[in-house]
Image 1 (cartoon, rainbow, N blue to C red):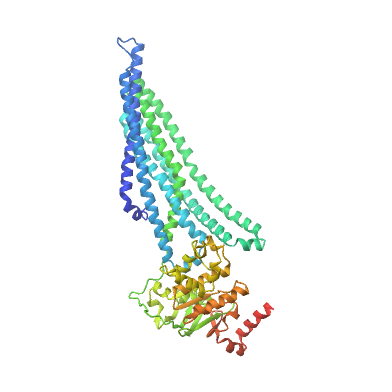
Image 2 (image 1 turned 180 degrees about the vertical axis):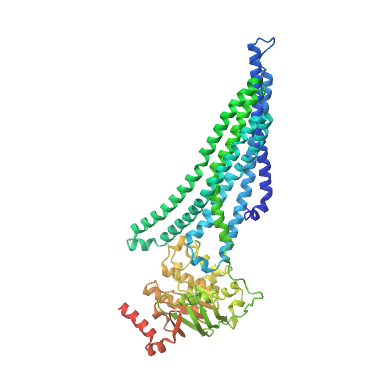
Amino acid sequence: MRKLYPYIKPYLKFFIVAILLTMGYSGFLSAAPMVEGLITTRLKDDVVDIVNKVPGASISFSYVIKILKLLLAIYIGNILCNYGSQYFLTNGIQNTMRDLRNDVQKKIAKLPISYFDKRTVGDILSIISNDIDTMSNALQQSLSRILSAFLSIILAIVLMFYINPIMGAVAVLLIPGSALIMKFIMKRSSAMFERQQVALGNLNGYIQERYTGLTEIKLYGKQEDSIEQFKEINNDLCENGFKAQFISGLMSPLISLITYIAIVVVCILGATFAITGAITVGQLQAFIRYMWQLNEPLEQVTQLSASIQSAMAAARRVFEFLSETEEVPEAYNPVKIDNVEGNVTFEDVSFGYNKDKMLIEHLNINVKSGQMVAIVGPTGAGKTTLINLLMRFYDVNKGAIKVDGVNIKDMKRDDLRSIFGMVLQDTWLYNGTIAGNIKYGKEDATRQEIENAAKTANVNHFIKTQPDGYNMLLNEESSNVSVGEKQLLTIARAFLADPAILILDEATSSVDTRLELMLQTAMKNIMKGRTSFVIAHRLSTIRNADLILVMKDGTIIEQGTHDELMASKGFYEKLYMSQFQNQA
């Protein structure tokens, strides 16, 4: 609650009004039994007088009607206060949760890529959606009821002692007994609820992963394996959920048992006091009602305990996420390059995802403006790592990377990354129009500029043949266009953004020959006059590179032009020839 308070504070007025109205609701609720007792006492006295043939004895209908009117006013006040409390509470909670979601989204932007490399997308989505929703639902359902329960218990105790201190003392004894039971069970079930939330995150991660790879699962006939793995994870969620709910479910029957024993004792005492005239029949009736009023809030709290503990477990996950270490702070006095030429230098760079195991050691590269640099090598050679360092998704452990002589650590990340344009292997296009996707990197682009970029990327003809042209809507995951067409669209996007340095990551590794030729032409067009880093498995696409860096085990083992490397008969030549032999 302490960590949640800063989010509640701006909307404290809603919660204060809700509390005041809840106090009114509880006050009206507690007044009703006393008023009802007045009717019972009067009717009992009237009946006794009639039976005893007291002169002028009769039922006091006028008195009863007056009390019934008062009761009606109490019930109406109760309903209005209850509705008002829910209205203001909902306002406060929804605004609080909105701000919390916004902060979680901001946190995502500030976390280093390394955080996401270690976690599944589904688990992160579970924190953003499921965990915050669990908190919201629990607060909505339980906050007003717990407050109402607390006030009802206080008022019931005061009024019971007012009616008869001895009976009040007996009734109050059930509270510590109930509290001990609640404390014991909640302590045992708390860990179970946390495991339940973790299991839910695992399940979401698995579902997201399997949905993304559904085609491959079907292709390799792994549906049954996938189902069995899902069952295993789902069973884990079921088991943890059952344990949490079962343990917390013990509270209600145990507390009810204590309450029933207390009510039996109170009824015996009450009957004795009523016979002796120490209390009236109406007061005994009111007292028994207060006993139930004391029990019902305790029952409500026990019923809500599962929801409360789920919310607490969810809150721990959300605030742990918000407390994760963010990217290294920006330089105190950052440098901004006004006219980027595109010279890139790696000076004695060493890096490893694990500091005990360096992936890249003592790497030196000097790339001049306008050069096309191709990075090749087997899987795991460190090609993508090189780009991650250049974009400062990771910081080097040793050495320096410079753009136009400026250490990239001395630049703001946004300024650094604005220098680059990227065409990734896993293209990303959002659910929107083709025009909107192309101008994603330059929102103020005109239609003419968008079309010029598309022509440069060899995708204008494809767009024009679509019924809606540039207004064609790309659906979720852009499944209504081919892989090659997605890549052409991302090349158009990169061209329109007009970056000084290009990164083309595996851009032609999953398309047919015709589209590969179109992509090569588009790549040549966009790379003119720009420093370009190209990562590709198809070595035929980078024969015209100014410099080819051959990487193996994180180290550049060869460098030169295509002709120079082929003539040297080294690792590159073997790699190049093996591709053509495989194709043959």
